[in-house]
Length: 114
Length: 111
Image (cartoon, rainbow over all chains, first blue to last red; front, side, top):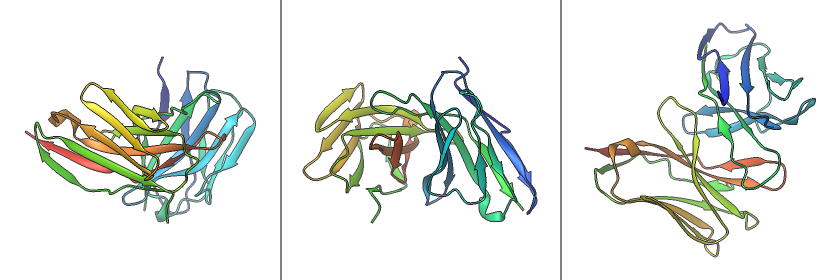
């Protein structure tokens, strides 16, 4: 099993550009989520999904869109990149049942917006 | 006040030292208490978890929960340079699978 994979590993964008961060998992997890991690701010939830076709906002959703057409994939779209979106982005997945909720993380995407 | 508070450090100790990492929380409904470890430029991974109060030991690591004080700890015995990482506490919130995270404590174990 590859676990949770993310592409690209690094990305540099100019202000106003759009892009999609890819996330895929092969563990048949129903729950998937996107976080951003910034120094002094910790992990902050952007969007999450409890299954195909179902998504919801986290605590910092502005400027980001998500969709979940399959169980495996959960892409994150930046609509019009801003310097404030410079961050490390992590995708995570877990089962929807059982406790505790162990989340499995991808290796991250380091994004710089100039 | 954040639901989970964690001193970000950094914490620097010599090899072989006993390390104590701590979090406080405000929601008395939390039942599971998790510790994740994050190496530099990697994603977090679950180290261990405890349910309700008490201690749990796994090798050199001991997780402790004091629900009366809303205080959790992770102890590392005989710390090694390979333990150098950021340690994050996390607690599941309700039934929606979300985790409430501490900021993480950066630990450096010096040879």
